[in-house]
Image: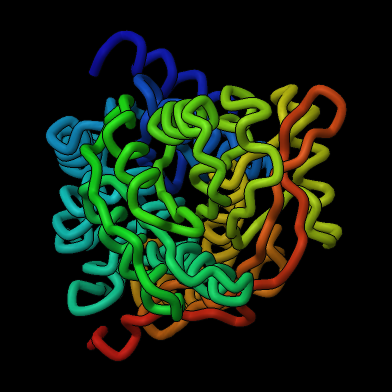
Length: 377
């Protein structure tokens, strides 16, 4: 463990209020590089819930996976074998989740996903100790496909990075999109130059563009797309219009429609309190990743009120009950441990000097996922 991670672990242990915790949580997330804002928001949302609960029985150890699968695996092995964590959480990227989760749950650990939820772990690769608290990867893209159909688009160009979540993205979009495809393209993960892709879009005869490019990839694409003069309407999932991404993109994102299971203006007391407290604590508006981190921690705490992870059957049942006040409103789990929830359409706007999103429609109600029947737990 590096000195930086040792100091961070000690600080967060103090924050949780415990010298020796009864339950130990290992958070592996991205805190450096182009995807750092996603992991930082995940961490901050999760820790805000722990702090608000005032729990002295929970210790959270946090490590930076550097967005590298091999690093994530090394951290997970250390957390499981040397630090004896009870629960793992925090991974943003699906390729890292695929490298870590199967081994972790095979060793009897619980994994609560704050974000990554690849199809492989929802279907035949599901596990009784794996719960996705975010969504199933396809969900927000399915809602984008449904929206594109309802908006009357007939010839959409679609693109996403070439990794598990990117494949889930385009599969999800196509599941509910009824028009033709002007083109379908997988880009390199971490790519920052999209001149060639934008040229292909320009020449494709498309009437709209759907793209999934999270983190720094989305910033690069949106800026280059705006500068290109291509004026086709854009549709995307919330990941490409995250609260932090919007500040970097600026006016290029205004008016773009995107799909999400959460928004800061979602009308519920729990959400209003979360947004207010997050803004007060961190001096910035929360993102989708922060909301998911917050919900994941509160789900975990609600289960810990009923059972310990050492009593696996009882703790699993307590998680499945989802007895917590989600910032998303109605929340429950499908049989394969992925959420059943509404998914919305948002529009990028500007409030004062801050770029953000506002709810404009509901794309799907009580959406589960496409892989429930493949899961045989």
